[in-house]
Length: 546
Image (tube, rainbow, N blue to C red):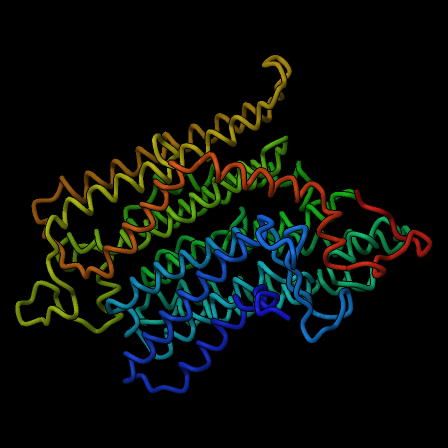
């Protein structure tokens, strides 16, 4: 057996082993821990790139259809644990790996000192996210989501500070409640269908009798609510701005991908259940309405805040609302366009969170929320001449120019203005809404989405211009911040990747269009997971998805 056949399990094993090994070293062994963390994250990035290659049918001799299936312990699906890497999973793994590397490098400047076991918790967070994108059954989706949540609790509370602890406790309570709902939904689905393997579920659901079908619908509806909480959808997202706004900058940047786990779950399960008619939370009308309200309230929230990091948190909500509304509206080419926007928004908000913390250093000590960060570290005034440079970095050449240009780039990206990838993503979504229908036949819901997305962009640029003017031009007490190169470089790399996504929009859009085709044709996924001879036969009451 070639080692390449183990590729699908490596995104789970690598961060798990790295996180566990780092626990064996004392906090004083920071160099060793840093070496392990960087090596694991780079290896994770390499594996994700290989899986993207595999999903693009790069290894036909092993996985002819480009769907990498890994059976843990050799147990065949649906009886054993199965990991599946298709186009959708691969692109999400790649996005996670890029964001993780950028956040980790940023944290190496000083944030790793926030509290014990930061590096291990960070690796466990990545393990949970990767597992959620790879798992082929609902129970292990629940397990991996719990792993990432447990790690996120620790990361969010790292560094202390009253605001952070308060926001963290709200975050923990809401997510524990959502996890309970998740588990209830999974239990009902298993009781009705007798399986939790998602591919097997797609086969069995059409054959359920009326009683079991009602129980299944109830379970799926409850499960959908849990996914919407994870996705940051209204009215279950009130915790998000406070939690993300209070988190340490590299932690908040890494959290940019967490709401997308909920979006991914809705996409995956919605695709597999579409054959038999998706239940309510996966239904187009529900998602569209919830997405529109989320988008509107997230946009209003951008106008209401004064702190850059809280503004970035509202950008995450706007991104979630845009995705839910777009996926709910549906249409040919919509899923591919939404995925392009998802990738762009994660890169942009990840960079924005880290940039926000650096920008706040331009304000004099005590003027803004950087007090929270300094309190967390137990540090003194950053302008104190007795303060060691190793704590706050050095004054990089043209630091203010870098911060200003980066802020403008983030503003263009999150609001969807040309010429960066945010504009391309929004343009693709709006183009997909029209399709080939004549203008007089375009439904009102389409125009409503147009108005919401364009209005959101306009309001967003007003909010960002107002904040930019306050931070860079309206204060007489701006100081040139001291930055570590390891803090500036990750932001620059994420923004350059966004620019690269604009330049390579054609190939990226083609890959994501093929991803949409595979989601629209779940038969290939089902066959790959269940294998020959393991499909539930029609004689057993099961249907045949197309």
